[in-house]
Each structure stands twice: as structure tokens, then as C-alpha cells.
Length: 104
Image (cartoon, rainbow, N blue to C red):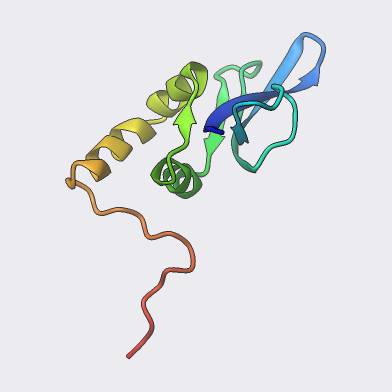
């Protein structure tokens, strides 16, 4: 069972609004999701995109695979470039929440 980053359609007829979510590959498009990472509103001019960068990196570290459309959104926001730099060791990885070092 693969985990994917993909879009979940919301909004009214002819007024789409999308949420970037984490879901297994066998659930329907608007089915049960594991986590919400952000949203995308293509109706506004310019389109509004708000994505939680830390959560996206956490799920990518865990092996989640973005769909083509989700990959396009992440690329346009510059998150895939940061992810590639982190994987190659050029950027320090963002610390996952709750992994703070104890004070000595």
C-alpha cells in the first residue's frame, strides 16, 4: 500500500478548490485521507497556494510519492528544489517536530 501526496477536490460546481493531502493509493480522490498539507485555489487571480513545508518534507522522508499535479505544485513553490538539495546534503534538513535536543 503506497502513500501519495495528491489533491482532494473541494468547493462548488465550476468553482474548484483543492487540498493537498496524504492518502493511500487505493482510496478514492475525495475519500479518507491521512493528513492535510495545504491548499490550492486556482479560481483567484493569481492562484493561491499555501503548503506546510515541514509536513511535506516529513512525508517525503517517509516515502510518500507526489502525483504529477502535486509534484507540479511543489515544484512551482520551490519545495522540490529544497528537497533535492536536502537529499544531496547541500541544505540542513528541517528538524521534525518534537525532535528538539534536550537542554544540558
